[in-house]
Image (tube, rainbow, N blue to C red; front, side, top):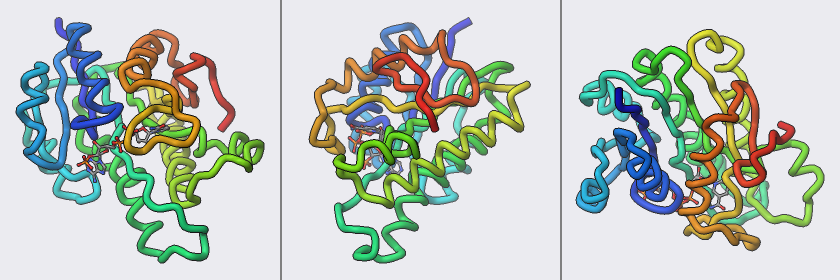
Length: 223
Ligand SMILES: NC(=O)c1ccc[n+]([C@@H]2O[C@H](COP(=O)([O-])OP(=O)(O)OC[C@H]3O[C@@H](n4cnc5c(N)ncnc54)[C@H](OP(=O)(O)O)[C@@H]3O)[C@@H](O)[C@H]2O)c1
């Protein structure tokens, strides 16, 4: 039987490259995007398009009413990084908005789809090295907004919580996908989205639930 995957933030950057990678590897791919603009490009690649904004509860209904029977993998890739102000210079709304997409958005997608995940299916939460307390403590010279770091640390804890409560049903991992040359790129970005997506695909067999991985090195990272 064909394997299937749902990918959020599928219209550009890493998400679009993931769609191409999974389609090329024979998967049925459901691509979640928030505007109709990219429907044609995604359908041309071979994906089935779902419309929904992960920062709203309506996305749950959009996903629940889509014709998805069962799924092997969910990839929570949609994310925002926001502007570069220091912590006490941004408004509480900035933090709320980042959490709403990066954390609650991933939670909404999982909630809408968990019952359709196959036994031992896989949830991949696309986190960041900046969500790791250890990485952040040891790399103070690397610039990243604190609202982004806070959101990815929370996404990591969502990952661990799901693992602890549901490990008998499905696997849940968080990943740092590398420093990718997308609109969200950091100063040291050197990976193409296509290579980053291929790295993630290559890790499918090594993922163990409840862990954070660098999919570039294919090694576990400390939380
Ligand atoms: N680039 C890097 O170096 C890097 C490093 C570590 C982790 N990551 C993570 O990798 C993931 C992909 O990032 P990227 O580099 O590909 O960034 P990107 O090019 O900025 O793409 C972000 C994607 O998320 C979607 N998105 C944002 N808010 C959304 C919402 N409310 N509902 C639905 N979709 C939404 C965007 O859709 P729109 O076009 O509609 O805005 C876009 O498709 C993110 O989670 C990011 O944190 C990236």
